[in-house]
Image 1 (cartoon, rainbow, N blue to C red):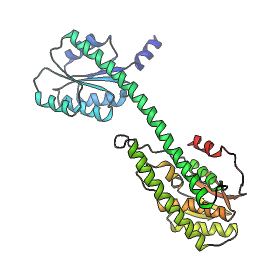
Image 2: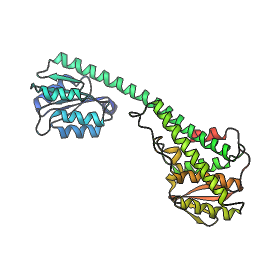
Image 3: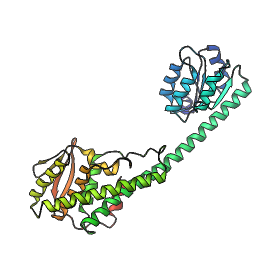
Length: 333
C-alpha cells in the first residue's frame, strides 16, 4: 500500500483547474487512469499547486472562465516558471481573442473546446504526457551538454592563470598558481553559468577571449608597478607592501600576525567563478599580480579558511610540483 502510494507521488502528474465541481469529477474519472490528477478551483489554487508540485507536473489543463483571473493567466504563470509543463486551455465559450493571444505568446500547447469528447480528450492527454516526457529527456541532455561546456570554460580559465604565471615570471614557477587556486577554492563560490538563452558557443568564446585578454593585460600592468615600486625586501616587508597595494585596489585585506587576513573571500574566485560577460576587476588582477611578485621575492602564502575570512600565512616556497598538478586543480573546480 505504501509502495503504491509512493509510486503515485513520484509519477508525472496532471493538474486540472476548473471552478465547476462537475467538470472536475468528470475529468478525474476520464483521465485518472492515465496519470495522477491534482485539481484546483481557481487560478490562485492552480498557481499554488504548481509551486508545490511543479517538479513532478507534466501537464496543466485549465478552464478559461473562472471567478477572478482567466485561465490563460495561469498558463502564462506556468510557462514562465515551469516551462517543461505542457499547457492546455479548455472552455465552453468561444473566447477566440484570449485563446489566439495565449497561442501566439506560447502559453498553451492545445486548445480543447467543451463539451469534451471523452475519446479525443484521453488521446490529447496521452500525447501531452508523451510530449512532457520528451521535453524532460531533452532538458536532461541539454543540461549535461551545458555542464560539460561550463566545465571546459573553468578549465580554460585555470589554464590561463598558469599561462600568465609562466609568461610573466617563468615556466618553472608554479607556487603563485598553487596559492591562487587554493584560495579560490576556499572561497567556496559556485561557478556562474552563462545565460544560454542569450549566448551560443561562439558568443561564449568571444566573451571569454575578451575577458581573459583584459585580465592578463591588467595583471601584467600591476606586476610592473610592483616591481618598479618595491625592490628586493624581506618577507615581512613584502607582506606589508602587499597589504597596502591590495588595500589601495579596494580589497579588504589587513596584516594580522605574520600573515594577512582577507575579509572578502568571494573576491578570491572572481576570475574563475563569474560569467564571461562580467569584466574582471582591477583589484582581482592586483591579487594575482601580487602573488607573482611575492614569488619573485621568494615569498609564498598558504590560504586557510578561518570562519568567514581567509587567512594567508607565509610558508616555505615550493620549487617542485607534480607534472599533473594543474590537472588535479582543474578536477576540483
